[in-house]
Amino acid sequence: MSQQASPPTAAQRSSSDNGNASLGAAAAPASPVAIGGGPNGSELQADKLRREQRADGPACVLGVGTANPANCIPQEEYADWYFRVTNSDHLTELKAKMKKTCEQVGIKKRYFQVTEDLLRAHPELLDTTLPSIDARLQSVAASLPELAATAARNAIADWGRPADEITHLVVSTSTGAQIPGVDVRVASLLGLRPTVRRTMLYYQACTGGAAALRVAKDAAENNHGALVLAVCADALSAMAFHAPNASADEGAFAHAMFGDGAGAIVVGADPRAVESERAVFEIVSASQATIPGTERLVTGDLGAAGLGYSLAAPEVPALVADNIERVLADAVAPLGLASGGGWNGLFWVVHPGSHQIMDSYDKVLRLEPGKLAASRRVLCEYGNMIGPTVIFVLDEVVRRRRLRMDLDGGEDGEEECEWGLLVGLGPGFTAEVIVLRACK
Image (cartoon, rainbow, N blue to C red; front, side):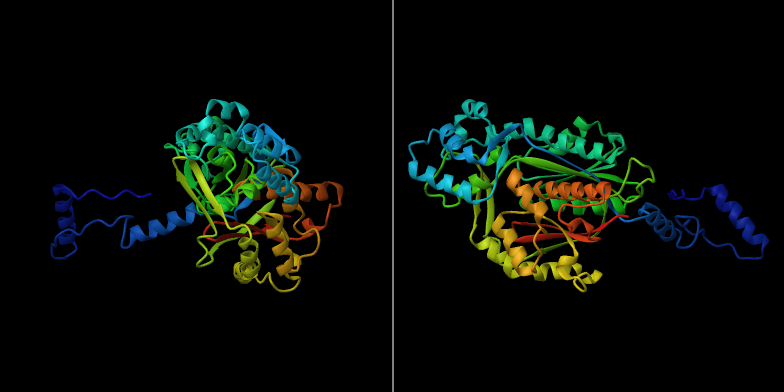
């Protein structure tokens, strides 16, 4: 970048005046020297710098990784475990309701940051009338960075290059609230360079993973040679776990659905032509749409007793059914993807939310059986992990695509599609839509 010139010295002014006189021109006051070496030089230099800063190609997914806490509880055992550790076995009707809900949601197992040791050390976590926010935040601060870093290490290993080549770090979480943020600790655990450029996203809930990927795309494409690590980690159990409450209608549903996890994606717009680095998907476009008047449907508040949230569970699938096709059509319209094969001509990376939400996708978009197979499998094996869930689905889609490439065959055929959509739905009520294209 050119530096601004210093004002001319007296000797320089004298020399300039003498030069003008020798050409027969009248002496005149010296003009300010333009930045960049000439008229409009600063604008030319700025334009040149902007061009040089841009990437040569589109942002691409280069590696994906996931991680979960060690505490895994089979769904068929969860109600008995939950009522035992909360000293609530005497609430037989609530326990029966939760058992029934656990059977209905179609989940096999989930992973939790909360353990019996943590509950014994901090019994205030169980009582919503007691202040427990300090203990919850301390638990998250102690455990979430390592969980996020583990997912990141897996993504970096999948990418195949050293961690210290990462230039940008995007971290999204809806659990915890520390300064400095979890991003600083993750960068340290991974051994990233001190010059890595960090961005923190807080409380995006179920859109956290998609939002992190959207920001990573912008960073990769607007910074030449950038290699961006997008991480999303949530430990809702540490922030919201409490004893059963008969007055909270969403209690049984929430405790039967949510789990903890972390996902990470390496994104770059200038992938090197080496065997160890194979771009999986091009990130073609990213958009966000909020449905007006729907703020009340999914809410959360951070208070003395931790993170309290409210879910309008019966209304959300209906909201999805009424709006999702219009939102998706707007997102793909500039690319003309709604024509031809329609929605079945795409592969799908959908944050599952619940089986009822995915049923809404299937019905309204008239999807063929198996189109949401990756999303349904992730929900079954992990539950709803809030933000990271969609990264788990992406990881599953990548795994299936690579299996097809290696064995010349797929599990359900969806991976053969060239174009696809990554979709996350969350509070607001907001939809994050990212258009993906399979790399050759």
